[in-house]
Length: 617
Picture 1 (tube, rainbow, N blue to C red):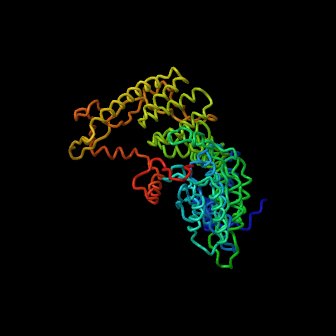
Picture 2 (tube, rainbow, N blue to C red):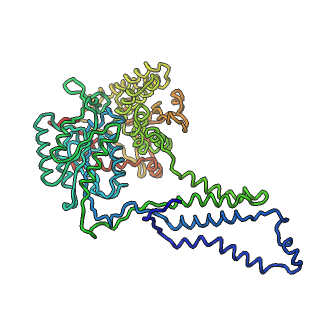
Picture 3 (cartoon, one colour):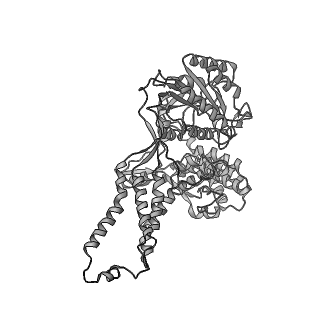
């Protein structure tokens, strides 16, 4: 028999009395039957009169009662709340310090020399580390050209996991890699100077300038922080060979005519950790390196304290499920011998409970990419595009980029969609996949009113799939819009100084843009290839039958600058509430606007600004 650990405790031991329920019931039932015995039969015939069936048929056999009694006992044990104390912070005599995560959000972190990208892979590693860092107060600082506080030091792991999900390039309004400023800013966010503290930097080591002076200033800052009692641990992200970077329009980023290759500055990061007394690890496919780093951080930030100064927090592992499942099984078996056709009807509730419980039993997880692809596709189908985009960001390869780009497109983030569809073209394995990605890329250029790029991209899509009716139709439309745009610009040149036209609207009426019917429906993200539990999207030829109407600027619909040529679409106030229900709330937009205000930007920033003298990656 297995011996229970000595740390096993019961949250509500009074529930043990529940185990006596069947015994009390049977005792009362026996007493009632005894009082109701009929005196009309002879003593030797009394057993025949009282029996439910002739001798030899024992439908109320002993084993049923034993199983039922055991089931009630296990139910009582489950309700009593058995639990194990996994970690007792009150009795260990230990205290934990504070750790600030310093996360690089510069453009170089979008390189895809590690899948799905440097930023996404680093985020997944941090999430795994956070699940093991018990007792630490952890905060989060993000930086590009300037540092910002996203999460102050906290013991709330759910909050940290949530905030890690907000990280993306473009969250900060300025391009750059101000690593030194990020370190100094992060140290200022510690809340308890008496406890040990450390920084964990997640970066590829890029600096605002590529000269030796920038590296010297970084080393000096590391020594100064170490003198103040702060160690710097570093997680290097990327590969020594590096990866190419994309511009906001989806093209390759260049410098002096040459493509920009963002490499991992491993020597610089190793020196940074060494100068401050910290440790360095490079994020690779295996997790051995960062596990060693994680252990070193815990050892440094855990110190002995005087007895009684620790926290009274105890972390428990609940064990009620160990008793609940056997109890249901035993109750099921105890009811299995009911007479006649009532057995199935009586067993139905037990079967239902077993099914519900069985669905909650943990099963082996799918591969990470496949599991996240299922989650993302399900979110996309129910039009939760922000959730779908965040989940698709974790999926490597063509399927992940197509899904992430399509989600960004549906959210109206067309510039992000351009870069992601471009990456999907590069990740495609077949001509059909490339045709789908190029077609969606062309639609995105069209949506941005970049008709010249849209025409060229539709032509490229037809090279991969000459029979695409959608690409042929949209190519004609894009050429017409390109010609109308050029004519409109010519007419605008002859009207300088006249000012815009205005019209007085009736109260309760608002103006919407004119609308143009066009086959701009992006290819839906693919379902999981491995298991394919969800229906596949429609073929591209079916897209013409499911066209979405997209708003276009009114000026592009006017053939002449007369009020009669303008298109007004009046909408009553009653429909505004219906429109609001379709909006997708993106929390990262709130933080983005907050960071824009912190850096002094008066208007929203769609594309991060490049600062003079600062490398924009």
